[in-house]
Length: 227
Image (cartoon, rainbow, N blue to C red; front, side):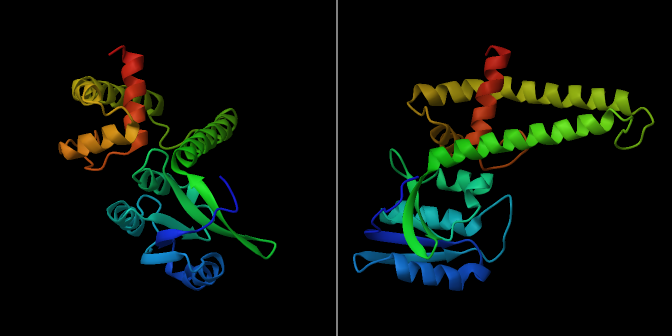
């Protein structure tokens, strides 16, 4: 992240919610200069954790028009995996988004590099999982058990084994395709994800959209399985 970035050129504006529109307009007015051109604006009408529909449209427009994505009042968006997955699709060798922030009355434009945001987001998710697990372990130490206690332990073990086997089988099935994609020069996580979608290959859960994190998890499992 770098501050004092000069906002010069063509921009596509993304605003995280309709409630944020007035604030965003004010920041844009203070941050952009006569050398800045806004070619389009996208505003999320419905805030969702799993998908950023308008953001995906904004990223697509940036790639089509060779424009930069600018986000006024970016807030906690970089903590969202849906946000990080969407901006990872920006074209360029080292893609980034421009974020307008105000600190102590001073407005500045910052560069947020997409890969850095993605990795930090994944790290934070893993930290949160560890914290949650620690809290559950502490609660279980008191004798507490979630759900119906009847045959709970056996059912949990069987369900875990079944899910693990399904995941392993899917990994073994799809890895030859991923290795072929890699041989054709698609070596980045996003490149592999795009290639899988271009081939209309669905994820293990039947989704049509692949994410860099989903590809990363598959490659890690393949390494664990030795394939």
